[in-house]
Image 1 (tube, rainbow over the protein chains, first blue to last red):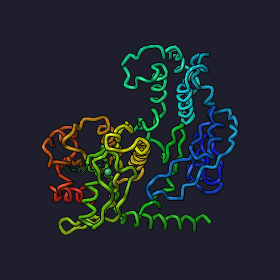
Image 2 (cartoon, protein in one colour):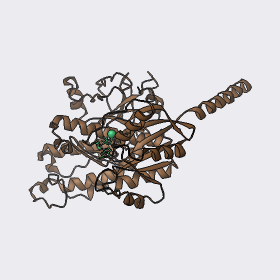
Image 3 (cartoon, each protein chain N blue to C red):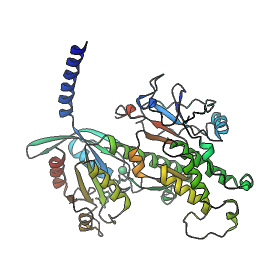
Image 4 (cartoon, each protein chain N blue to C red):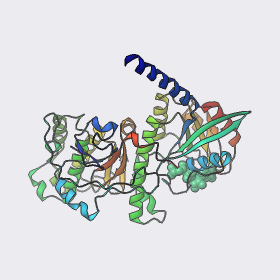
Length: 215
Length: 213
Ligand SMILES: Nc1nc2c(ncn2[C@@H]2O[C@H](COP(=O)(O)OP(=O)(O)OP(=O)(O)O)[C@@H](O)[C@H]2O)c(=O)[nH]1
Ligand SMILES: [Mg+2]
């Protein structure tokens, strides 16, 4: 259940239509995107430090005082119809645990993306996508082929990411401060993303909330 | 219950209709970063209301939240056209904080700016879908108009049947090439101007009144 009302903490499964007209419980119309990936506990635990709080937009156009998302232990209740992102997470090889932190970051990010779009992609597709990718762990030894401007990245993971991105992503966080935007997808979205966070989360605001935010 | 509710409904529909007709058209100023959108928005707002809309800057992604100036009354040929102008963040497919480092901005600030810029593009795309009645598309006439972003945005605007004016800005600069912009989008009218110098604003206002009035 990746979306949570920032007012009352109520959570919604991905793709839930309920939140489109505001939170049924408290009427709030700001929601935090919470990928229920493997790092959920860690990220929640880190909240009190303030490091994972959504950035407050600098402008005064923010309609409400931005409420900190309430940290919840969001126990992901498995919904039968909803593919769990964890099973679509690419696990290239057994050596993965020994590979760098960066790889797991990347995986988490993709998990977030996959989960954000879990209503449009089947786990099979994701599995297929991950199988087309050569094992990632041995690639760090390869010299950069130079074909990719992001030469620091692993090509296998990159291919997978590209494929995932092409399928369902509106904003790709390449690295902190570096983003790629899929304009078509942003245009097609119902909700609009108000606040990005580096760990693949974002706070979204529903159309209802705007119109009040000017001058 | 049925009759009364129906009656009420149709009354409120009628009044809605009346108000909708009176409401000024909301015109989004779109285009790539640094094209001069805010400079133009400020000029329009200053010319007709006396206020400015937002800060202009040679640093790209200066505008990172859409800003609206309401009830701008433009007079043309004895007629008054009222519009709301929305200055939007420059639309792009890539934002990299490194762009900002060249402008004497510290890394931390640069990362924050690029995140805000990305959020701003998301917002601008959303406005385009939901909330604008017409578009002023601003291009820097000294740069190549054949870009993916321009093609995609103009395509979206066309698919929505929104009236669009294409402005070839910065005609005061040496490398200006208005023709190239006109060639890139032959299906639309291209108007040259310098938002900075205020050149050709008369024609711009005439066209705004014609297209969005
Ligand atoms: N020479 C010249 N410079 C211009 C003109 N219009 C704008 N500029 C300059 O171009 C730079 C960018 O202008 P802005 O109005 O901030 O551009 P913008 O399209 O709002 O940019 P973002 O908000 O970053 O998307 C500034 O340095 C302006 O002074 C023009 O007609 N001629
Ligand atoms: Mg601007």
